[in-house]
Amino acid sequence: MSAPVKVGVVGVGHMGKEHARIYAESPKAELVGVFDTDPGTAKKIADKCRTRVFATLPEMVEAVEAVSVVTPTISHLASAEPFLKKGRHVLVEKPIAMDTREAREMVTLAEKNGAKLAVGHVERFNPVLAALEERLGRPRFIEAHRLSPYPGRSTDIGVVMDLMIHDLEIILHLVRSPVMSVDAVGVPVLSKGEDIANARIRFENGCVANITTSRISPEKLRKIRVFQDDAYLSLDYMKQEGEIYRREDGKITRDKIPVHKGEPLKNQLEEFLDNVRHDTDPRVAGTHGFEALQLASQICGQMTPIGQ
Image (cartoon, rainbow, N blue to C red; front, side, top):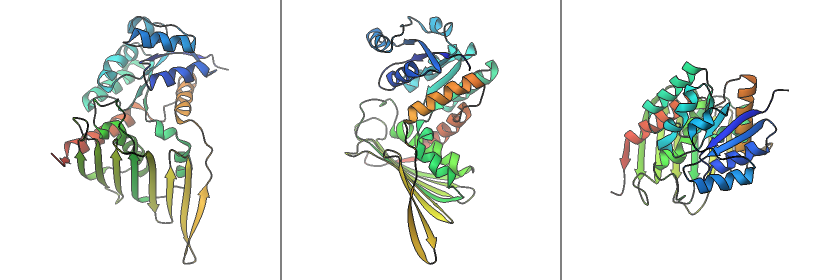
């Protein structure tokens, strides 16, 4: 059996503390320490996870084989760069970077130095997606809704980069065809950037995707519906439930899709550890994160503002 991966976490706030928790509990990992710009937060999480606090990033670089970068998007490149330059494997939260230039630089650094670069599109590790992929044919129309209350965090980016990018990465993965055109609208409400957005994407193979995202909704909702020639699949990411509708003998039948429920973030981090231990490619690599960011940037660039 491979030895546990010596891993660290950079940024132990809202999401980072969950990375630290999972690594601390995993037999595949040795959580050697954490780093945060807030020393008090770092000490609190380190104590809870029975690990140490690193005073600087260069100090952590020398002690780890791999790292989770869970900092604000604006600092993803700066936080990941010293690790990638030393050939350390990096899992960076989504979006991969602030812009495609930074994302490309991260991908290049990883390739140049033999480091694995994974991107935290955690919904790809949701068990409902595996259930969908098992039944996937050729998608003709995809509809995705992602709604949440105002988070009070990640407000340095708009809702497209904050939330919609999850669905963009998944849809690119499912459709596997170049984007032909994009129409988008956005509404800023509580932030400088858009808090509500809708995008309609046409692909060269004829598939159309309609995506609605809001972070000022009173309810939480994360659903995707996929229409294909032989079936219609409806999946709920939050409940980890799904249904499939088929046309048989002139009637519509409905069946539950069996889903083996689990914690998506744990699935993601465990697989990242396996990538490092067994030298396998990440499910969502830096190139996938780049492509999702590129599409999100295109949507933001073509977005028609409403209510201004």
